[in-house]
Length: 161
Length: 161
DNA sequence: GATATTCTCTCGCTCAGCGAGATACTAGGT
DNA sequence: ACCTAGTATCTCGCTGAGCGAGAGAATATC
Image (cartoon, rainbow over all chains, first blue to last red; front, side):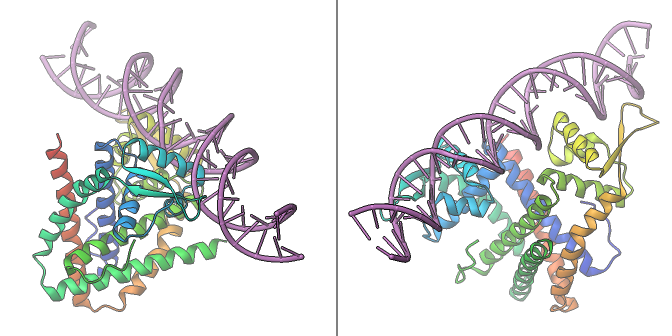
């Protein structure tokens, strides 16, 4: 983490800060997962499922596996796990009966809130120290960094194959 | 990711943007790792080792394991892996001969640059669209979010035990 | 110098995720 | 209607990351 590499290019310090934030987020997620007997993948899946649920987008094993970069076998085991934990339920799609629709159980929503709720509150509280204009700047900055990272990602993929 | 949940509290949008950035970072790391035959843990270890190296802080299996939340057995296997890949070398500490010092090989530094270099360049490029005052705001904002997340983390830990 | 402590490693195990392929359904051409 | 190709999910067997328990070796404490 090395928070003491101060006297450098401000832009490099920002890169470092971005990484620091992601490290903190990941640690938070990992500890939450461990505390609830979930694997990191299970938590990622839970997040994806709750996102899809809120957006009213139907989720299937195929989509979920693609999003988490798991192959079909791994995806099946993952869903077995989540089902055993009572977080998700499988239902055959009536219109395309090859498909399985994944619906989140109430327990999953509650679990999600128990994770995000406190964390979001803390973040919102920390934002009180910033004015509207500053928050706007921060938002544009983060958006720019997200798209830049995504670009770097597809760029690297294209370059290496 | 659901980038279309626009008309909400700006502060909530910011939380979402933060998460989006971490997701992108993690995807980038995962794809880099996969492309080089590394496991996610190996890459995290590589980063920790390079950080320690640049800070001239001696690294040992114990420290590394603690940082990555691995137990001693897992740490040993991890270092075996990194050693087999020629990224790190074990050396017994002469002053305390229970210890092993981990020194990074040249190959590890090169690998690290081949990962961070392009990504950093892209990020720096995207920062050109922002003025010094805006970058300063962004930096303070990220620092605040990092400490808030860290606080939320230890808070949750204390609360749950 | 006996005892407790610290650091690393070994052994045996569990289980997440992979590759290959089976199964079941749909779509498209004829 | 039938045959083929394509798509979605699951089963089976396997590899290997990481864990718990504990051994071994060095240091610190009394």
